[in-house]
Image 1: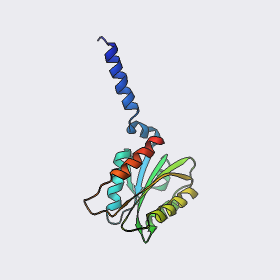
Image 2: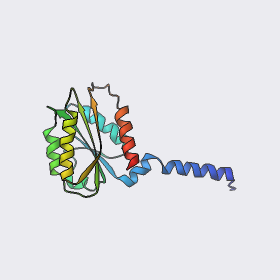
Image 3: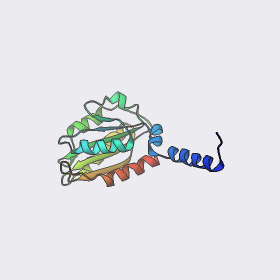
Image 4: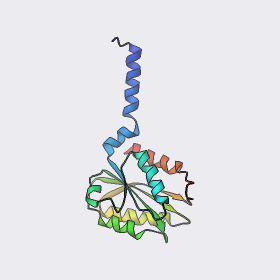
Length: 163
């Protein structure tokens, strides 16, 4: 087979594009998405984020804390209840092993308010476990089957590309 300069250039462009894709970045990142959902809204958002990050998706009752510690990036989600994270989500974070050099992305769903307070509470607990939060995102007012996650996904993609 004869390889021309044009053919080689196109091959190099394809390889470069592959190497710069997010999926390749995630091979180095090693991310996991862990969430708690009471009504299904947070689960929907978690699935969209996991698809974007090409990361495993685990409901927190299935996510063993010791196994989660093996990932470089914890993407963690909770609904907001009473301007706080759910008690299940907070208890899970408190059960995590202490780590070093790990990053976290936090997300939540909420109806009216409390998203900032809830995420600050989770961030504080994660920091005591050694996680550095690199992004906090939230989605307000979801209706079943009607969810536009484009803004959240854009922010998550941007954070993944930086780290």
